[in-house]
Length: 123
Image 1 (spheres, rainbow, N blue to C red):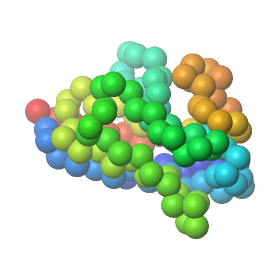
Image 2: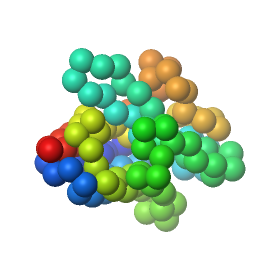
Image 3: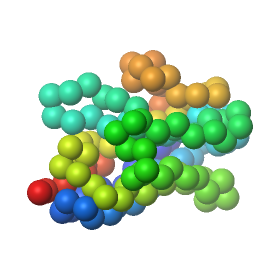
């Protein structure tokens, strides 16, 4: 299982970014996939996830209505469209995958990680 995240950068308050995560070595049908973020001095926390079981989607309360997760099975790629960005969204964003229906909320239980991509939102 390999995950490769990209798309981070420096943006201003209210801007948008789209993160991508290229997945290889596994079938999206059997793995839950999603995004975690880790801000300086804080724990890694779940941002969004797509269930492998039924495609249901989870969003953290802090990003509901602003972020949209999606996947392209044919390309083996997952995306996180981030709109109306705020300085508090500043973090390293990691894509994650776990065999099964859902990603564990506890990041220490996640098996597969991509390298992070830094998102910095200035005010």
